[in-house]
Length: 287
Ligand SMILES: [Zn+2]
Image 1 (cartoon, rainbow, N blue to C red):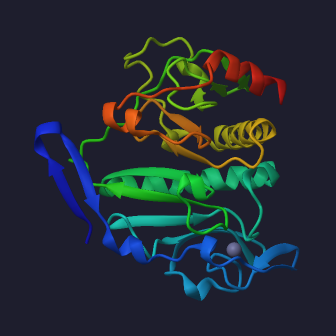
Image 2 (image 1 turned 30 degrees about the vertical axis):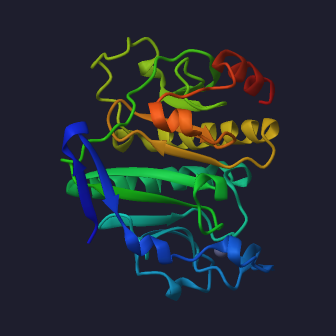
């Protein structure tokens, strides 16, 4: 059972999850990767095909022929009572920029299916940690979903006004908000939110769980293109992204190229060393 510690005076919470300390770390044990049935596979990786018995039973799966293409199961080392792992692909090395448009759509469909199911039991948040600097312990590309009790006070941001556009398609816009706490932060938002003022409730109906399959496909492609463009500027960068748990929808990508220091932790302020106007211009050039 997760233990929630409230800080009544500051309306904040801490989750005690001591079992997390025992989880395995790839950085302590480099894998030998081989090519098998067209995939990169590591014999030591619990997320690779052939090692399914090393994970808890799957709760959802998208299949392609006889194989799985996206697979979801409970996290063996949970932060909260409901904590799931979504493995993006059978391939041990396939990062988002190398995924096909169809594979990206399947990943978005899995996010939507799990969020729809899990929001019945609390507030689910889906996120991806890529790389050691972003907090990952296993390298095989995966996302996670954590469900929080609805009484826990969250300090999440609401949708930032859409400025400094990077890229847009028929449904979504990628942009670098003026209020970016990290260098090269990019947000993806729905086009119908383009002209709303901050704090407006008009777009509260824009939620990820209501997106059509066509919108999910477009979002997957935009996410892939954005990560690819960022990778051309920040070679081999680590990053986090998450979908904001409250409407209207946004997906926030945070490159982890800058470590918050004592000043930032002590004050809650952020120092962003790259102006979002310049960041957007630089990323646009890479598309
Ligand atoms: Zn693997």
